[in-house]
Amino acid sequence: MNWFDTLLQGILLGGLYALFAAGLSLVFGIMRLVNLAHGDLIVLAAFLILLIVSSLGLDPFLAALLAAPLMFGLGWLMQYHLLNRTLGKDVLPPLLVTFGLSIVIQNGLLEAFTADSRRISVGALETASVQMGGINVGLMPLVTFGSAVFVIVALNYLIYRTALGRAFRATSDDVITASLMGIRPNSIFAIATGLAMMVVTIAALYLGIRANFDPTAGPARLIYAFEAVIIGGLGSLWGTLAGGVILGIAQTVGAAINPEWQILAGHIAFLLVLLFRPRGLFPRALD
Amino acid sequence: MASLIETCGLTAFYGDFQAIFGVDIRLDAGETIAVIGANGAGKSTLMRSIAGVIANRPEMILHHGEPVGALGAPDIVRRGIALVPEGRKLFPSLTVEENLQIGNYGRREAGPWTLESIYSLFPILKERRRNPATALSGGQQQMVAIGRALMSNPEILLCDELSLGLAPVVIKDIYAAFSRIRASGAALIIVEQDIAQALKVADRIYCMMEGRITLTGRPAELDRADIHAAYFGAETHELV
Image (cartoon, rainbow over the protein chains, first blue to last red):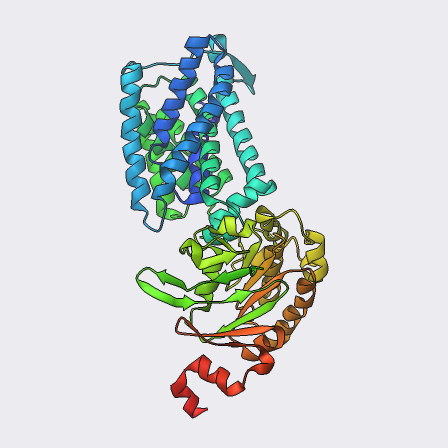
């Protein structure tokens, strides 16, 4: 076994998990909402991309570009008209409603697309690789990881350098005072969820290219996303990337020792972090 | 001509608890009024009702004669009514300058206030503009809270307990800025526990006790003993 190879594959796999998690992290950071339908929304976006590819004959990357604004709209509507009604002091209503949403999406997809497992094909790109220090590295994993870093950098820029990001942070700090300043928290939350759904679309593109998916694939993606967010520390986007990478490395190392241990090793890494750093590796200073 | 703002039999509740009972106050253009009273008299509830944090029946609050009692805070601030909340309530994740810029959200077109004019009103804030807002002293934080409210170019500025927890010399500094705020054309409603401070800055005083207005008038016309009676209630008056 080549340890360097295993480590590198793990890091690159972590990019995919970070993409799964970034939207979840953004939404949690701004409105303390845990969206249990997050994984199913990733799968929904993957089917949407597939639908655009098959009906318009577009390249999957172009199809994702088209799907992203549609997913933004869906996220906006879902947040504004449904999830905003569940926000408040009690943490249970959002959990119950998004859990229900998860079941609705799974069954809706089952009706529309059957239980067959699908994938998004990008032809020769799937098997293309580049030489790095004597190791063959798949081009798709590299592109996935690059996209994850790009998404994290872009979200951080948005949050810390723009007027919209200021409003995100202010609303996250104190909803009532933000509304006294003229901010409409419900709109801010809807925009945040819309953005999270654009990130979800990117995650869905790479999920669909790299693996098979079917209408019930969502909850497992949610677990990985959730673990990446918790390992990294709530509210920190770079922490989320680190969390994804740790999860990815644990899985590939586990798989290298014994292929049956891949998934288990990831969960064990998560539990170890919870045991020794219950607030995650890079928790935000506040709350 | 209709008053800038007028409350008509305003009542407000926190859940089942009624905090104010039929309060009538009036603010005219260019005026500064002070609302005084002990803890729990309903002063902050009155401010939060006017600012739209607490929803009321529409006709209970009139702005230029129009019913605005049911509007939410984002709409109220866009109409030119800004609140400096009790306890300052700065955004801890934001720097001093970002806190001020958040005030832009409810900004009205016409008005004198910009980042520059607020830095000229409170020069210390310019020096500290890159600091997290919560790293400042209490007095400086209060300046940020006032500046943040001014950024919306308010026609009416509501100030809730500006002097709470601040040293007298700092309070003096903050109230020193008020002549320029008034000169900018804004009318003010000031909530104060410090009676002497209120009498000094206000054109008219309303005294509240247990959710009702117990006394009103111009500072020069009010007798100190009457204020104490209105402030603490009749029983205490006998002890004074």
